[in-house]
Every structure is written in structure tokens, then in C-alpha cells.
Length: 343
Image (cartoon, rainbow, N blue to C red):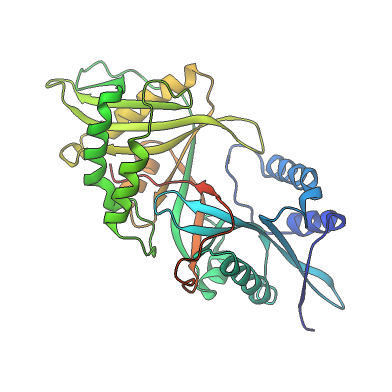
């Protein structure tokens, strides 16, 4: 029986809930919450936003069905986001329920809608253990490009050896941040992106010169120094103005981190992150999260083996056909996460 597609309406919300709950695997932001808790919060969010279906121009919700079995799958598409490292416009599949029969029409419609609104890429996230999903998206030209890592913040013992010291950054440290970022920048470009290193560096320069390291209440910038020489050897920029949409837990996000290559393997990164955790814990934060490019195996190994992070989801990306010269999305979009350089 042929699969047909239709745009969802607010009245389809319970159909979407049923399809969502029937999925075999769920990407989860906070793994120490039970799967049932995660599903309950997500379903509550779907119902709360049901009135936006068909009205929000940035949102496209599609249902796949056949005549005998009814609704078979769905796809929720956010049309305008921006990859914060490369600046490229992309559409994001916020949620989906796909199988071998429903994936071709739903993903085809998503790609068509993304291209029509000036996007160069189509992205989505799946659970790291979702082998069936990985095979399905590989067959449709998606490639894994980013790992989302998360850990519950716990107190760490203070290192009294004096090998390193950590302090809050001053505005004058921005030049050190930019210089070190230049050295580590090649490790941050997501796989398969068409942006050059020079373009990335120009974006960093522009964005970082606008950072207010001393007065931004949603930014915690830290500098790590060699305890013997007093020389700055790394930095950590934390965004602190977010809560988990599902649970309400306070989140700190690793906006950027870098340690001088001369100090790789000397536990400077571990010291920096653990000092940051102690500061965050006092401020009431529950989770620390970040993103690591798939090819940056050094940073991923440090995060998961030495710092206690776990991989919560994997971002997959499909590069779409080039848009016409000068084409621009019909909206500003919102930033997707950036990634951690090698450290």
C-alpha cells in the first residue's frame, strides 16, 4: 500500500503522541532521569505546543499514512537554525518516527522544505545506541558529525599541588582566548561542512571580540595558568543561562574550551573542568554539557574517559544540494551548539 503524506493539524496531537510513544529508541538529554520521566515531559511539551501546528512558519509537521493501517510515521521539522561554528543555515528534524517505508517520503519532503527556505543542511539527533536509526539515516545520505556529551555535576577534590591555578577571566584575556582558539580551531569544524578554516576563524574573531568577559551574567569565563610560571595555558567559556526544557534542571553549556598543545596530556583540561564544576555546584547547577565533533577523538576520549561525561545523542547531518547564489533563509534562525576543540 502506497504511503501518503499530509501536513498535521492541532487536532492530530494525540496521533503524534501515539507515534512518539511507539518508537523503540529515544535520544535523552539527561540519562539519569528514567525513560518514563523523559517521555512524560516530552509528551507534555508536545501537547502544550499543539496550537502552533500549522501556524508557526518555522515549524512543519508531517504525518505519513496508508489506507489500511492509518498513520505510520511522523516528522517534526524546524526550518531555521544556524550552525554556530560554521554559520551555515540548516533545518533540524526535532522529532521523528520513521521506518524503511515511511523514511523516503518523509525525509524527501523535509529536504525539499529545507531547500525551499534556503537551508544548506538537514540535521537530526538520535540516541548513540540506536543502531537501526544509524543504518536508516546512513542509507539516506546522512552522516554523523557531532556528539552531545552530558554529565551530572559533582564536587571534586581541590588540587593543592599548585601545578595549575584557575581564575575568572578578565576582559584583557580575550586576546589570549583568540590566539589559542586559532591554534585549536581546526578541531571544531563539523565533518562534511563546506566552510574553510579561514572563514571559521573570521567568525570566531567577530563573535569573541563582542564577548563581555566581566559583566555578562550568563557567561562564566575561566583561565587556567601554569602554577609555576603564571602563564595562561587554557580557557573555558561556560554559558549559564539555560534550563533543560523537559525537566527544568539548571544547565551549564561548554561554549568553548581550549588548552595549549604544550599542555595536552598533562591533565590541565581535567583540572580546569573540575574547578569549573565546583563553581557551578555552588551556584545550583545540576548538569554540564557540550558538543564534540565526530573526528575529534582526542577530546571525546578525554571527556568520556577522564571527566565522566557520557554521550547522550549523536547529531547526524545531510548536505543538501546547493541553493542559488545569494539565497538566504526567510528568518534569522537560532544557533545550534558549537563543539569542543582538542584539549
